Amino acid sequence: MGCSAAAPLLSPPPPPRRSSANSLSLHRRELLSMATASLSLLPGPAQAQTQPQPLVTDRVFLDFSLCPSHSRSDRTIGSADPGSCPDPVPLGRVVFGLFGLEVPITVANFKSTVLSGAYRGATVHKVLPGEYFAAGRQGRRERGEVRAPPGLASNTETFSPAAFNLGHRRPGTLSLCLTENDDYDEIRLNPSYRNVEFLVTTGPGPCPRLDGQNIVFGTVLEGMDVVTGIGSIPTYMPTERIRQFNDLAEFLGDDRAQNARAMWNRPLKTVFISGCGELQVAKPSLSPSLP
Image 1 (cartoon, helix red, strand yellow):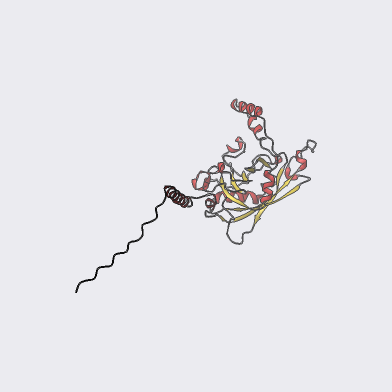
Image 2 (tube, rainbow, N blue to C red):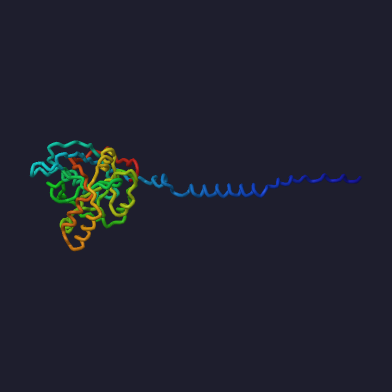
């Protein structure tokens, strides 16, 4: 008996030929898909903000007010102290959350200055539009300056790289003025000097030029509208000619140059701290976002 012939094997039909234009388009789509997937792994602006948030261990408040009569030329002699302003106009309260686990010495010194009342009557002496305002410059109280209370610890955190880990990434960041410090030279050269000057970023954007130079130790929890309002107050800006004269005077060793620069970026309205104190923290909580 003869064997029947084997059935022919079936082979898959040949793939349809692609035109060179179609192949090039598909290749481009594949490359674009791969590039998009790779870029999604890189930290973008939104991802950069999602970092571990510092713990708020303490809460303090500062009340800010305007003193309309302080800037008047006909005010009574001897009534220069903004703390005794006869006609204050309240601007509102700003509540700060402090990062006591991150920079305990800086936070402890700030709290002690608040609780001692040393900030009461201090003026906002500098406003940089779109960046920050500063307060707490040391000097004479009748000029709206402060005296650091006794007993503040020597702040060794100013020499610690770990104290500069937090950045000025959002409006409402509270930091200790180091490179932005406006204290007079004769005060800073005193062996018992303790820095109590602080700044608050006003926005609308971040202020990265301050990163790594000033110690971030808190953030605004309430009253950001007050901060924004202070940041929008017009300031005194010297002309280029005045700046050149000031640079020459400083080069020649004229002590008046520093006093003149103290007027630069000064708000044209007198804003002062009319009250300050501590608020209770029921339990440690995370700040709303990393500064």
